[in-house]
Length: 211
Image (cartoon, rainbow, N blue to C red; front, side, top):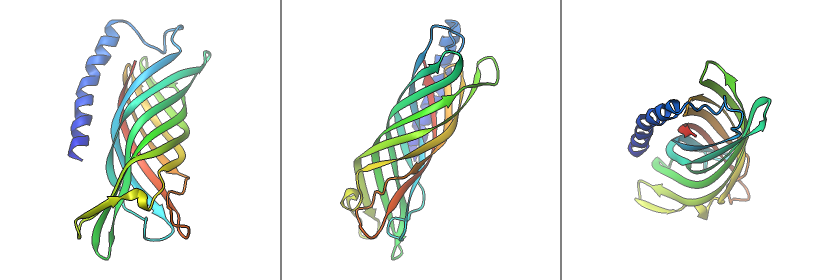
């Protein structure tokens, strides 16, 4: 949690300098007829959990890191409709108690969200951007840790690596500065137990730079 807050603070202090640089150059991608795409950096935090039919994978939220890149392209020159694809490292999972002992599930995914965004002009350089789409993920790291026995093992012994679902939320952009809040609703069953099912749930808050 400490490293997530530190990284977010670093990018929060860095973004205004990029925004000032952009303003000094007189650029605004919403005011330029020749601009049809943008690139972005993303850094933020997940508040993730898993939901299941039994108590085995029914967990409480835990925080995780999000970091990656985004690419957006305008779908219509006459309307502020955009398609954005991202490549993220996203930490999910959850925490629970089994027989009174604390157990945490740590899932690290390589995640590909694809969403449609609509830009609503609130002021000269201020835009509200609701978005909706989906995501695909592949698990690249994962540990389940029992704090009573002080033992850990691969979480993929009991969970599948593939995940996918719906993504919805809203972003706010001012010049190059960007912040978004959204929710990932997992639809893929990540449990390997044929008698049980488990799904990821994740609230995310990201900061970023678009250029």
